Length: 153
Image 1 (cartoon, rainbow, N blue to C red):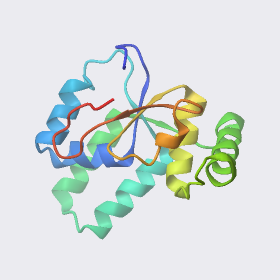
Image 2 (image 1 turned 180 degrees about the vertical axis):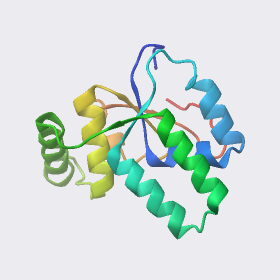
Image 3 (image 1 turned 180 degrees about the horizontal axis):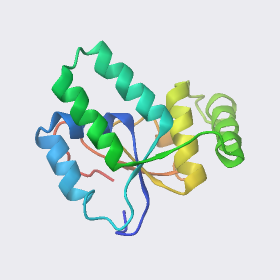
Image 4 (image 1 turned 120 degrees about the vertical axis):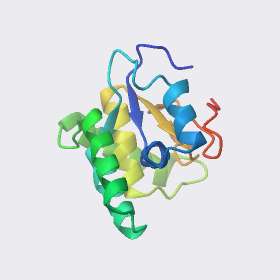
């Protein structure tokens, strides 16, 4: 359950839905009260690179890329160069490959995003299940239905 004063870290796929502005993105914005929150949601610097790369790969036009840049400006970007994030990255990478049963191959970008959420004590918002094995050991995660924007957990 997300409390009104929880710090939220948005996964890359959530940004994609917000930019597209379709039903799922609108519902995510409204359900999570992204604009009304006392603390602005955060994103990892890794998400900035990942979403800009996706925009190029998907051939987004100038208008959509401008909307993306405006959304990024409205959020707080957290870095990956603190000792706490670097330590969490190592722990999450090790856990995913050596401890989790079954072992979970975990993308490097997702490992960095999870490390940021863990280090900053942020509640991760995502539309995929890739982070499930890290909950609650490293992160608090809330799933969102990518088709409807419904908050799942």
